[in-house]
Length: 306
Length: 306
Image (cartoon, rainbow over all chains, first blue to last red; front, side):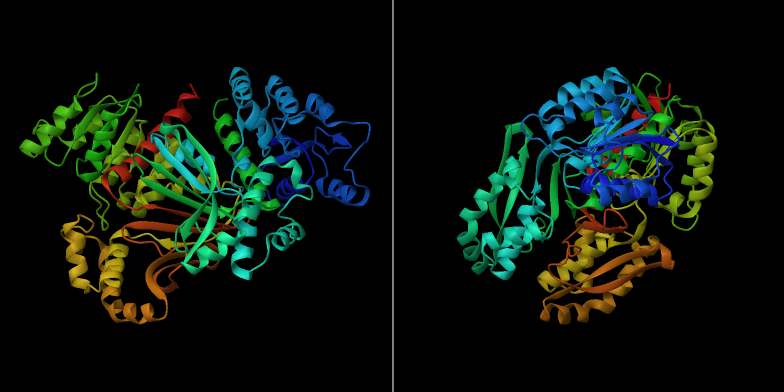
C-alpha cells in the first residue's frame, strides 16, 4: 500500500480524494489538510467521512492541525500538493514541497506556482534526496504531455511546441464565435460553469488572456467570415529561444481549433515529426487523472529499486 | 553505454541504425543481422560502414553468420527485433524474441506478428526472466499510444478506444476523396510512395482494408456531398467485448478525420474523459522514434534497479 498526504481540498483535492477512495489503486491517505485544518492517521483516514465534514463545516479536520504539521509529521511515501497557485511568490506551496523533499518523500503537484518559479531548486533537491518531483497536472489537465515528452518521445529533439493551453480562454472564444456572445457574457458564463476563477485578477495569465480577448472581439467576427477562427496559441521554439502566447487566426479544420475547455498541443520533433494531443484541460476528475498517473508512475518506478 | 543487437535491416532497421549512429544517445550496436548475413563486435560496430555494405552488396555482414547466431552469441543488453511481420505464424520473430528473453535480455520490437499471436507467452517469459518486452512501434508508428495507456493514463479505466490505425488505407481514402482517384490509382500511388507493401497479399489486415475500400469507392463520393467523409475506424469497447474495424461516415471536422498517412486515436476513459493522439503512423524515422523511446525507457527503468 502506498501512503500519501494530500494538501489542499479545493476542486482538484476533492477530485483526487474521491478517485483514491472510489478506486482500488493500492493508495491510502494518511494525512490531509485544507487551508483551515488537518488530520493524520498512519493506518489511513476515512475519506468519505472527511469530505462530508468538509462540505458540512467547511473544514476537513482538526483546526489545531496545520498543513505544515501534516507535511512535517505524517507517515507517507508521497505528498500530493494541490493548494491554489500563487503566481507571484509560489508560497506556501514551495515551502511545503521543500519540507517533503527534505524528508525524502516523493512530491506530486498540480500547482503551477512552484514549478514556474522554483523548478530548478526543487528538482535539484528531489535528486539529492533520491525522490521524484512530478507535475503532469500543471499543464493541460488530463492530457499526459509531460509523460509524452519525457518517455513517449524520449530520444527526440523538440523543435517546436504550440497549442491551446488555456481552457477558460478557449471556452470564452468558442462561446463568442458560436453564439455571438460578448466577452463579458462569455466570461460570466465561464464563471457560472466553474471554468474561471471567481477572482481572475489573481491569475496573472488569465488577465493577459482576457485583455487579448477584449481586443479580439471584433476580429473574431471578421475571421468567421473567412472560414477561419481565432485561438490563443502558446508557442515554444527552443532553438530560436522563442516563447510566446498570442492570438492566431486558424482555419476551422486546423487540428488546434478545439472547442470549449479542451486543450490541444502539437509537438514538432526531429524523429516522430508532428504529434498532436487533445483532451480536457481542466476539471476536478480530469486533473485528478494526471495526479493519479504520476503517483502510480512513482510507485511502479521506485518499488522496483528496493 | 547500453549495448543492443539489431535484427532486421529493412526500412525500420535502417531508420533505427541511422538514429543510433547520428545521435549521442549512449547506445551502441554490438550485433546486427539482416535476412542473409550478420556480424558482431562487443566493442560496437561501425554502423555507417555496415549500411554502406548493405546498400552496395545487399547484405550487411558475414554470410556465414545468421540472425539466430547474433541473438544467441552477441554481447547485448537489449534485442531490437524489426524483421518483417508474418501474421500467420509470427516466425521467425517469436523464436528470436524467446531466445533473447531466455538469455535475460530486454526486447524491443516493431513486429506485429509476435505481439498479436504470442503476447501472453512472451510477456510471461519476460517477467520470469526479469526483463522488459516493449512494442510501442507495433501500433500507430511514432504516436506513443502504449506509453500513454501504460503510464500517462495509469489509474484510468479504458472505456473505449477508436481511431484511424492503418496509414496506407487512410492515404488511399484521402487521395480518392481529394483528387477523385479510383481505388486502383490511389493504391498504385501508395505503392510508389512506399506506403503500401509491394505484395499486399501478405498483409492480412491490408487485404481486409482493401476490399472494404473497393466497396467504399461510391460511398465516398456520396459522403462528400453531405459535408462528410469516410474513414476506416478501428474500435475497441472492453466492457462490451467489442473489437471491430469498419468504415464510418464522419463529419469533415471530426478529430479522427486526418489526412494521408496520419494515424489518430481517441481514448475514452473514466477519469481523463476523451484523449486524442494524432501523428505519423508509419515511416522509417517515425517508427525508429518509437523504438528508441522504448530503449531509453528500459535503460532508465532498469539502470535504477542496480
